[in-house]
Length: 374
Image (cartoon, rainbow, N blue to C red; front, side):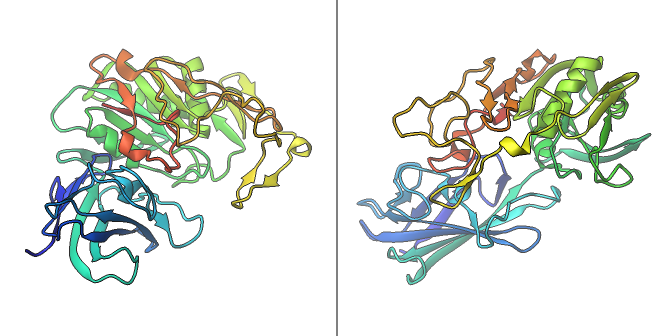
């Protein structure tokens, strides 16, 4: 029997949708290697591999068979995706054009050598960022520069404004995926894009107020309020929007500062200067694996402060909880991921933790600050 790699769903799926990966046609207890490869839109290659052994019937199901080594080990059904690593050091996997998929190539090789085994089978799968029927609408309304993603149907749908952090530009991948869950999502740019300011010297909340009003006036957006979703600097701006602006019903804040940092914040006659960082108080050390850390040295048996859990942690916070603050002991800048369920939006499906397969035992995603709609 010829070995065959099967994926379910077949052919294509959404990026946040789990895959079932199985292999048939192997010899009983046959050792094999599975390799995954993906190229981003700039041609950078990402790879992962894992060693497996077929069962007594010559089958291999990644949901039941633990990996015996490679990029990860243990029972990780989606390990070949979350463990993808770039050939180019420190290169980040970012989707810039959500209208096209990432193409994942899976190869099945005989034996446990990453590059020396005979190729037994191959499969190609497309990972999309727009579910069937989702509509992408570029927005140039007044000063607002954004992209609106609408679910299939006529609505009205609960509305969300999605804002990212330092780096600027217009990132759409999170908004496009959320639209597939039943939300009307406005991916909002606020600097370093089109005719918007290029730097971060000052931010005017009137611009964000204009975006809120645009979304609330849209005929396919359900009122009377909308939700906010922000990361890093975008999270801090979401907190400011929720504090000063009307029409905000809920917010999800991911790793955002509770104080105004990086740029002056202005709204009408109110001006909030940026909180300064005492660079002279920051002490950086290099860890054994070459990663810079600003945390003070401590002995292995000393008390570990509460904060961001290791990605290896299996603890998942409950809905509605406010997570422990992340505090830099050197820079004295508090960070607190704050979770406010979007279920307070009328007709909202609510929230759940990011799917377990996106974590993995060695994944860089933290289980404490990434949330997704169910």
